[in-house]
Length: 271
Image (cartoon, rainbow, N blue to C red):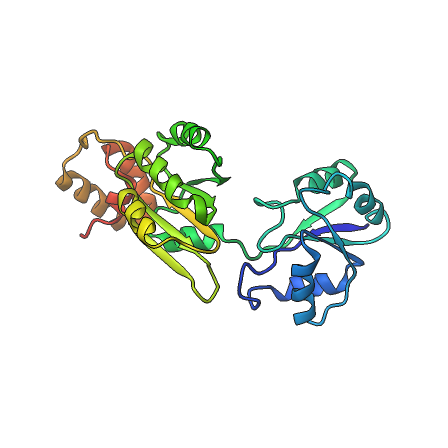
């Protein structure tokens, strides 16, 4: 049965590609690439000669039938310029069409800017909302931010360098004094992860305009209500849960539901 492989490609460092991804790119009969020049450089680096066809946001409908026809008899790999295809990159239309035509879709794990930025941000990773790129205009951007303002978990966006300060300004004015992280050029020579408050981020990037690919992570909403339990109560409950063999993460979740305390604050308590 022919297969549509979803193959992540490096977001910067060419070493960030799996052995399985390289094997698939060698073995398929056709690679549908967002930019054949970018993918061509990757293939040349690894001495892969598989034929390429362009597949991007401007021709994804026009090229759909050709790729589906190829998938009737042979395997095809879908790649984007960098990272995982279909994640803020072209691919959704082809993936849906393949599924509707009973074509096997096989995703490969691999590079993405989203998760490395989140885990290195220092912000909570147990739950998050990813929204791709924010709207370009302030009114649309603020509407999206306002709709997310009450969510208690980390918020993740991609942003273009020339819109970063405007986006951070809107985030600060809508969300207030929250902590954030801005990851820039991950895996590349000038990789940087800046951490601070939204207000500090606006000031920093006004004086140091960023370049390259950016991921913005913002802390979720934290209730200002006073905890129902005292710190002594929480410490006692945590000690009891740990003594019973429960993990710290599980104990923190359980106690948070009962005490009114934030899970993170409980988890970080020293006993």
